[in-house]
Length: 459
Ligand SMILES: [Zn+2]
Image (cartoon, rainbow, N blue to C red; front, side):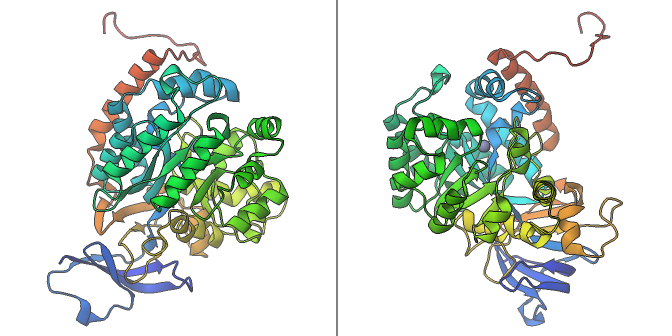
């Protein structure tokens, strides 16, 4: 059995009492945490690997509850355009032009950004190639709940995506049977629903049934944009959340993403049904809407944070999203006391674990839980000094302060060096593939400034 001992750290455990251990240790054996805080020397075996963490902070690995890994190569395709252009002329053409190998490289690139930002687990709402995403996640050493973006109706869908309800469900079942709990259990398969625009009631109902049967979650974009709620009202006479409630699918295993356009009654429905919320502050600012996060927290709703996809946010960096979450609600509520730093740390740790249905295994540094953790080195001009370290972790930490990332007892990044992936070659391949996808998809971006080509001819 392999043991690792991290010594002399400030440990922000996020356990039930939210204890912070000063000059504490974490003892890890294989993939699990054996002891936290004051470690009994009798538990330490000869041959243990010891790491001195003096001056550093240790946190549970962060949990990103909504990230489109397959959209990573589309970063920068959706800036400064209106919603319909974003969707029909940028994102749909891009995504529907991806090959399975593109999706694999896209996910690898996204995994690098996740690891560098201290994320050890994430939920993927759905590209089209769950197999290639799973392969990349396995290689990266991360944990993920992967889903296919399922769609069985709606206007303006690329031809390749026009599929029947039965086909969409069959593909997801195939993925689940082949990949669920693979990569030592790190890769799990969930069911995905894109949005109310593209999902029939039949698909929504059958998806929820299957998720219950296989004891996994349903991941869906809910009330993301105003137009979606208007569409729902025109078609069903009620908004998105009320319609999902009428269908009877809102439940503890339902992860609702964005949730920007909810009425007060719909917030109450979420609380009653114990629906999990993924708040994506940057994406919400892009499509202009404030989710009622302070109100949801008051009602005891499990709120988590997600980055969304690269064409909607551009930064797949959960630490940036923590900072944004700490700011935007204070601004629109004109109240600097709402959405506090400790609540935001809960969103990206214990709440994230609950939303991923992994409360027993993840989200805090406690004996018996999985050894998913990050080592933070705050000694930088951007984060020093520390008067109130919990606040600093949310308001002034940058992903560059994440020094090391461990998942399942293995270092994925140590001292800022990636250990599971070849970053340089992935970056090169990502750029080449991104150029080729843009060409294939026929996406033409206007130059924002005059471009003078100084290359010698023929180069
Ligand atoms: Zn999304």
